[in-house]
Length: 59
Picture (spheres, rainbow, N blue to C red):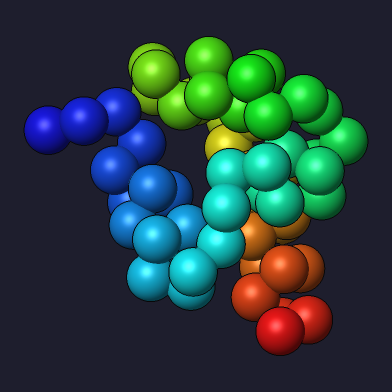
């Protein structure tokens, strides 16, 4: 199983792009890609989940 599979699925199912999530967090898209390669620590997971919730609720 790929690292952060649940987060990847949420992004895919909500038709979001990684650059949108990265923009909401305030990081470069390449940084998000690096983050998603290994399991996120608690602080990063919280930032990503907050950004996803914001983007999904604003659709």
